[in-house]
Image 1 (cartoon, rainbow, N blue to C red):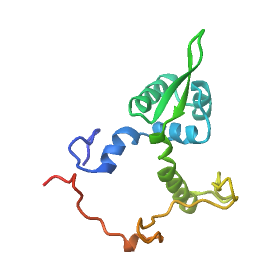
Image 2 (image 1 turned 60 degrees about the horizontal axis):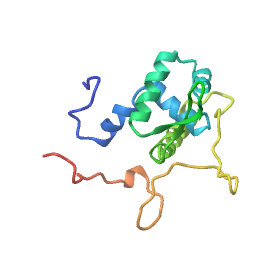
Image 3 (image 1 turned 90 degrees about the vertical axis):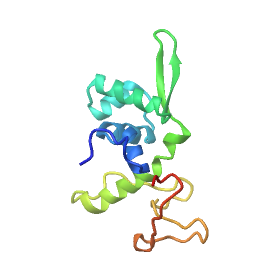
Image 4 (image 1 turned 135 degrees about the vertical axis):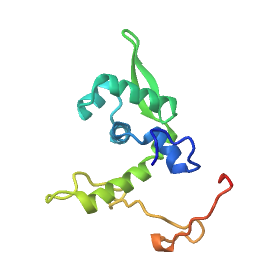
Length: 151
């Protein structure tokens, strides 16, 4: 059984969970992807305790997923803006959302829909081959040891 940290796991998923593996953290990133920037907006959206939100925002800033950008001097206040690293989380979060839409949505359907702003068509998080640029089914995926694998 995994403990509270994954230091001994030689696995990129475990390492990502060290940063993102807590419910409020992923919901903060979701809200940032939806355009929220200010502490009070996150707190209102999530209904999370202020001390918990403060801790999670600090962790996301420390991890380089969010950056604090001052927007007011007196009193000093900050926006929390996604970095490039944070914006990359759109792909796994859209994939997780789509999975939830397919398997867990209520009778009324999905609560949110993702569309390409330019053409208006639905977005999908899909595995693609880097060489032939074709979609790849999970049954066609091969996982091999990488250079960072110990032993």
